[in-house]
Amino acid sequence: MSATEELAIHRHGPVSVIELDRPDARNALTTSMLFGIGAAAAAAETDPEIQVVVLTGAGDQAFCAGMDLRSFTDGARFDTGSEAGAAYERLVRGELSVPVVAAANGTAVGGGLELLLGADIIIASATAKFGFPEAKRGLFPASGGTFIGTRLPLGIALEMTLTGNPITAQRGYEVGLINSVVPPQDVLPTALALARQIADNAPLALTACKELVRLAVTDAAEAIERLDYWQKAVFHSEDAREGARAFIEKRKPVWQGR
Image (tube, rainbow, N blue to C red):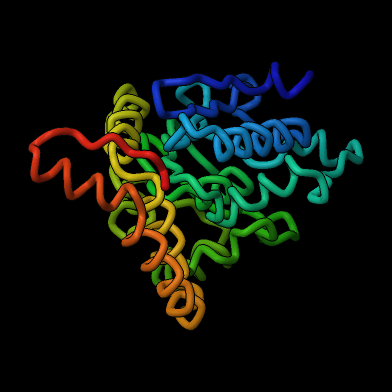
């Protein structure tokens, strides 16, 4: 099965929706899917008409059950040296230049939760659960899962990784992993509505906000250095002038991304 058969890419104005489309396999990740997701993410970054990416899964049972173990045991390997592979890695690390909203239509475990952690905002189904069961299988979440402590209190992050036990969407909301918990049928519409709100804002400002807020959590010294760059780039941009003009003229701004 090719990546095009395992993924569905939808366009909603300035929003690109990347949908994992293997509901019968609980949207488990194959290597071809990883490349496909990476390629779609890279395409969104380079398309000036795309301002936000939404990640979701097909069906109502799972966002993603993690790596497809059959694919793994068959010897398939993921090459991060390719452009698509590198883009997937940046997505999982939260380094994609465009904002990413996740619509967690169902449970996400293992690599599926690692993919969710690459999103900036997570909308979750009330029926979903989230966890890292790797320790139960003699493994550990090696594709970004051990960085979950950047989004959660340390004790919760250690509990999830050391026990391998999942948490509910409501618990995820309470500890700050999830932004909103909604009924299953409202997950994607809620995520799209939020994505459109984000897309209404200036692209350059969005890129600056995403990079600086994330860096402030992971590398405060670098965040201070990058703040100087972004302050000059954004405050002297055409979009900054357009934002001021639009406010004075009481109209919607027309962003140029520069």
